Length: 117
Length: 106
Image 1: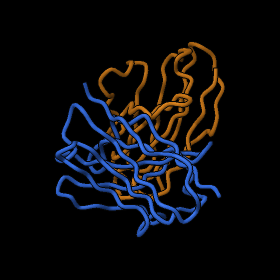
Image 2 (image 1 turned 30 degrees about the vertical axis):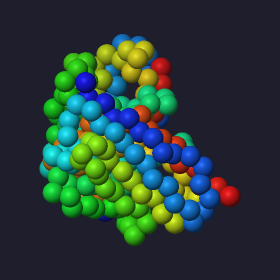
Image 3 (image 1 turned 135 degrees about the vertical axis):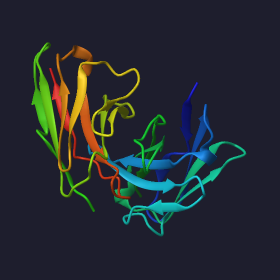
């Protein structure tokens, strides 16, 4: 069964750091495009970051230099390191397979990151 | 970045109605367009890829059309379980821009 199970969200102070995890079963994170997409409360979806099968990464301008996408193929897990957070980073963060050449499918269940002092 | 504009932003319809949602891209994206359904409190679900390719398991009442800059998602006969917000998303660029969403109510 294909499944993406997320963990690592929570309350964090402005300027702080947090690492989100997405453990995958049913396919290999190392041979697929994998992305993070976020959704601020009551708002729409915004793509955040992508990791290619060759390990190359790309991120949205709004998070460039602050967020780092990575993976551990041995654990079949995708990560998003969130650094120097701001209030407008408050959102539900979703992991998903996809990016170039295909849609985002399937998705993790989402994890809420709240930035507040 | 490519801007994706959906209309309407919200829509109220009755069971059995034919429903149409449009999505316009700010530049030519070919057929690099996906449609998602997001039910309240849940992750999005991919319905249609490549503008018109129905994903496995998606009911046949859903269809997509269009190319270039103008796209349409149609539900041929609205069902109660179709209550959701619908998003279009381009993948012609490496910004993977989403539309702002269309909230469908019954």
